[in-house]
Length: 172
Image 1 (cartoon, rainbow, N blue to C red):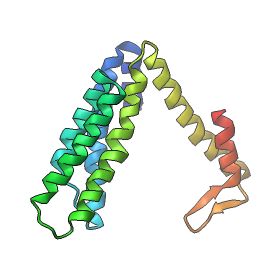
Image 2: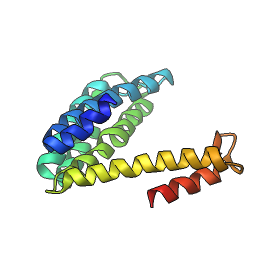
Image 3: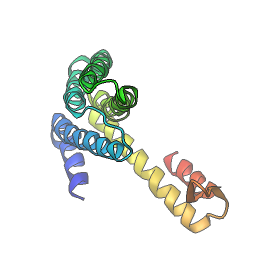
């Protein structure tokens, strides 16, 4: 509830403040993904990822899509160069994990920054969040009430085709 209030509140009161909330969430997500990868014996370099995360979001806000993509490529290059100091053992594995982290978290989150940039950006972000909430609630409700045909029981034992249909219907 606190996070939801912070997100909606910043979007309604002063949309640029949303960038601080988003930036903090992205930095936490990068650290958490790094820890999860370390549990699997991958070691993405954290320093260039954190610096690159800030650069991606800042340049997405100030320079648009070109800034976001440029910062991503510079972050990927920094990850590759930073990891060189660790020697050749596991270089490809760790460098790939670092580039994947940069791609998966801050680059994709940069699209939220791009959504916010136009004059009606706060409304765009709120509609996007609302669509995600509708997808989750619709899928859960339809799955619980009508779910009989399992989608992929070995991967996700509770996902059903009925839940998927509810998710799609709620989004529409």
